[in-house]
Length: 235
Image (cartoon, rainbow, N blue to C red):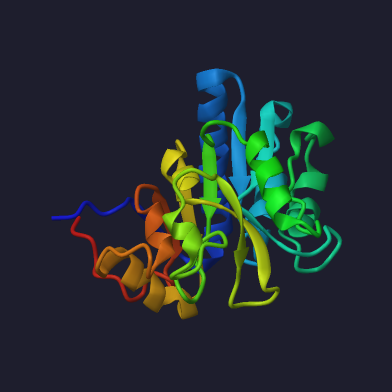
């Protein structure tokens, strides 16, 4: 029998605080282990209330000991409304005492994305202490889309990638980065994600078809809507 990842299921209104609390604890554990923490943020719209809650409710986090990275980025300038960095900057980074030198953004606006990917992977730690991920309607995570060549990558840790959703070009971490992370959270909200969550957690294991299954070794933090199609876990 395949081992299922830990699930944390909460009411929708509780998800931002629950996820932020998990992140704060993971950061604290990493700092306790090594004196610092490397965290990779997820993008899109879903993490925004979580990052805002992290800034508002967990002011004790020693941000000077935290280095922030990104799991993926769209090929847009950092000021573009679709920029993952821009979203994180407004909701979290500008609202905490985080030194500018501790923020390592992907340069999605670069004309040569392949060069940007090579340069970014040189910045990465050997393994992230904390990796945050989300799931797309097609089962993608970061910018690893179903059937993408990057899913077979074993040497490169960051690559340029194509997306079926706009904008069509991205930068993304690769499967070895997800596998190496010390603490991973897949955070999912909304009823329209319930079907893909059910497939990822209870369907056949095929990360080429459902890249989000690369995170089955982590914790899945779900609101009740996103978990609504899952078979109840025995108490």
